Length: 125
Image (cartoon, rainbow, N blue to C red; front, side):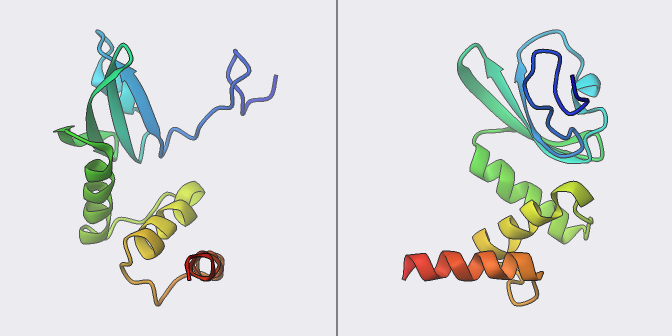
């Protein structure tokens, strides 16, 4: 099996920046955030989502957030305000969130993001 797949055959997500779904359990928070540069933890109890937390540099910075959009907005705000570089493997994702969805600094974007923004604007008009 390739190293980019888990033992059950599902694709492996980059842990440096991803959304993790956690069950309420005895697993230590440090183990869940190990290797995670930037991300959002989704805490679930069975099928119910009970909360969200923002992780930066393997530390839970903002725990107990009530909804996912708030967690994303606060994470992006922290990254922007603290001038933290986006992780290399997900920089375009973060750039799209910042410059297309949140419209922060959209005038200075990479060619890929600028092209996506133009295609999205064409479809909405």
